[in-house]
Length: 267
Length: 118
View (spheres, rainbow over the protein chains, first blue to last red):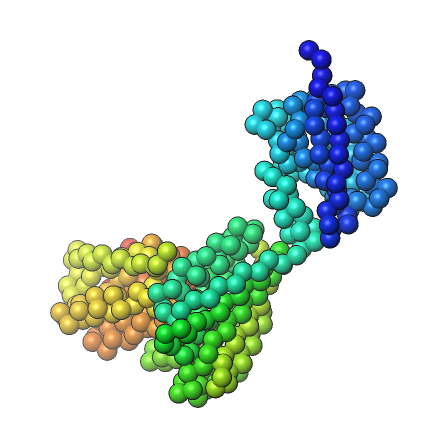
């Protein structure tokens, strides 16, 4: 059977000068090796060191072609980049699995996922989630669990994820308890996460009657001296946040309250 | 998902005025009302020696910790005790950070906690 003709299309990614998307189509066989090599030479010359090989339209990958991809990947890595695959059909993916190639190459399901992985792992770009919620305690558990799950999904360890869950819980509970309540009142939760840290911001309207009690809680504690007595009813939440986070700032006025927490990834 | 908590109560063989309570779920601001309704009713019945099994307690926050301290204080005031066993690592860390490990009676396992009952 005659091999299907190889086509390679190189595309830039707007805003990401060091990334190239290589759309391959047809059969990647021994005769394709030279063209694959030239294609990678081309992108390396243009200082594009992170290559996403889109294999959606590829029908066959021979061991010779795979070997060439390994060599090209090595060159990209030497320039601080990488070569990843996307769009592999089940047959090709199984073949690559059997050849042990999926232990070497990262394989993404689609282009979007591959680009997001680049932004996250290489550019270490943060991702932001914003949620507005009404000031009800029952809304807080699903929110804290959501943020914790996101952290886990982003590769944070269980211990970090649990600490993040606790921080979100305590800040949001404080906002519900000390903030203004009533129809139309909302609390804003913003989570900014990158591979190294998570930042949590909570903003709400203040209840003027509760501001003095809240500001009284903000007297700086020496974290080493937090000793809780059984009948102590207030302030444990903030103490806990202080101990679990790397930065905590609270701005409380009669108009509004904003809390900012930074937690550095530990595992 | 909203957080939930379940409590199951069991007698402790050979121990008078004692109960084992298994906590299952999350102990937070939304579940303390239920716990505050169930546990103090034991004190009202004269059961002041309590062993709390935290094996399936996934989460506790500062509010939840507050009621654990309250139970411990009340049991002691009534001449009894409130002992906790099988705490998971994450929950223990929260108790430790708050500085409550010296205020609560914490045991590695149930047998040890039950053996320490009066």
